[in-house]
Length: 160
Image 1 (cartoon, one colour):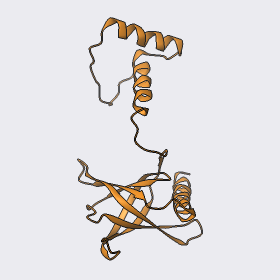
Image 2 (cartoon, rainbow, N blue to C red):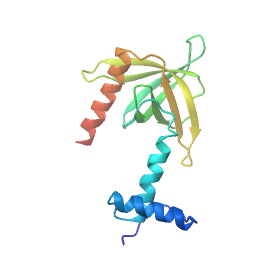
Image 3 (cartoon, one colour):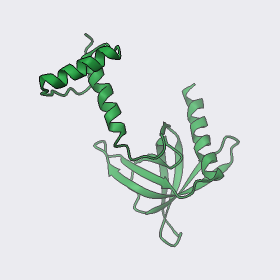
Image 4 (cartoon, rainbow, N blue to C red):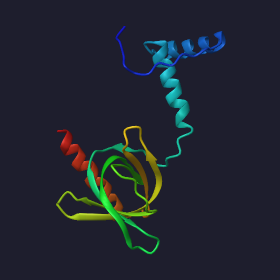
């Protein structure tokens, strides 16, 4: 058995449930009881997923401008994308974003600047002191798709 740094959870489970887990494990040729439990939990949690679109992990720098309700600039800064989908993006920043509305700017694959408007739906402080900012895109159009595509392509090039 290999040592792991992952958190461990101790569960008390009745015999009938253990038998069901083991039956699932053997019928699906899963190598361990722990792996079977992880798979069952992941499948069960998908039922409660609130996101409408799958997320793609990214690590891109984007600039943002926080806007008030009238479209006036309140703040600006840089953030690192953590993931992105058709519906939104998750940013990591050094400072909280106090605006409700935001304008994101990224560089396209041909060097052009692409701006996309969004609404802040999550603003959370992490234990590290960084901030996680969830942004819902306000439009689902060609410009938004170009923004998403450019970030994913840029990230793919970084990994190679």
